Length: 98
Image (cartoon, rainbow, N blue to C red; front, side):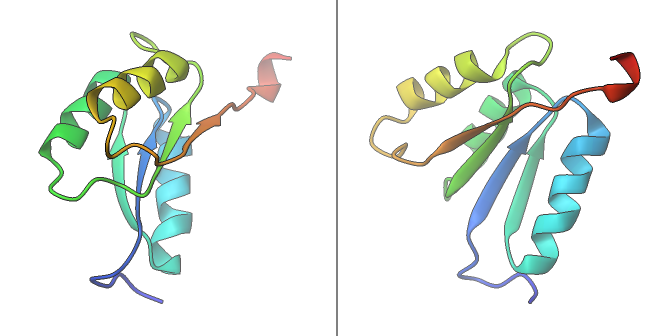
């Protein structure tokens, strides 16, 4: 299934390139349009420039500058009419440091 006009849009926000790229790579072939941001500030910039807001936002919980929960609150505050969209927090663990 490729990208189409009616595809759902997902914004993936993660400061780890490998995680963000893996999610995008997994979602695109399934027909989703994917926008990517490597920080909370970048996510806000991308959201402001998007003509059609995403259907879903996947947000890393811990990021430099702006963590996921404050970003989700900012998005909800900036787009109150739009954002009945779910924000799904992502937490990944670096097992090599455990």
